[in-house]
Image 1: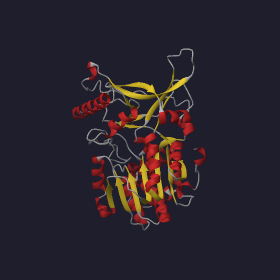
Image 2: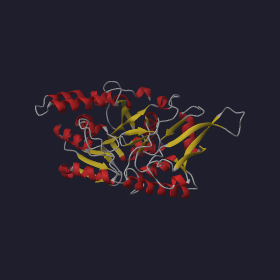
Image 3: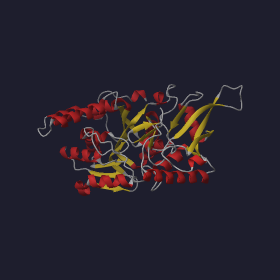
Image 4: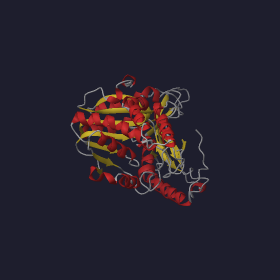
Length: 414
């Protein structure tokens, strides 16, 4: 995918990106002039006061599908329509009832839209939930607190993962933003007679050319470049286990996301986690035709694959290897209760019934109904979010089958 380097950003934004670049270059210098891409991605997204999620950028659009405003960089499912969160709440309710709890814990709650809609639906179902949020972005936390203030003490914010938890965990588009390792299979240039490929870890170096010393609207993607080193240790083993040697092939492995899921097995004592993200099972993730991997960036509602463009001003993500996530859950002594497409999960969990109830609401005018229908279509269409996004539920001491996987469970494809 090509990159549009003519994306317009303000002078203040360019100055911020310059500060981020300076910080990233310092990290590279202190690490011997090279850092793994996962570390570079971590700093670009989460460096205190500088990273994309740690500074005051407007990341998530503040309007729904019926509004043509495109403030921010991307739109998530909860922002499209309340029906998404209300449908998710049907599954949350089943999990809470099974584990005898009213506790919900959401990681990375965005604008707070999902929390609000889940709480609203749970209240309708007779559940007064205690809703906790763990949010690392200060500006998103402020937006959440404003949106959810009418819930009072039912909603609280945590600074760290609980030591023990009974209830339902929500993670919508969380795994994709965890820093990933980038690897490639390369022909060994030192042995021209060999056709064997070797696995390399892709890292980042700073570019010290005069043109890159000042960020401008023409060159704010010219500060950094790739440099490869031989893959070793856990990364090498993971590459060799998951991806056959294919010279010139590049992809990602998210060891941090896998560690996060394994660690959940320590503190999730009873209940389940609903993981919603875009991705594939392993056989599709490392398909020969997907030879450039899944790295993707979003800025001003434009998607591209130039990760070095405007550090600090754009989101950086990778798709999720759901086979690896399932393996990590099992390694953490958790069960995988279901895996399916977002469309199938939402339809199983009652989206259609909720939508029909809304259609009967006399306060809904034609424009509102059209907007709702368009949003639902985006959520479930195979050409939109319906197939690319998947839902996996992991946990312990829950009796399957769960509502969202009553039909079309794809665990056999993992």
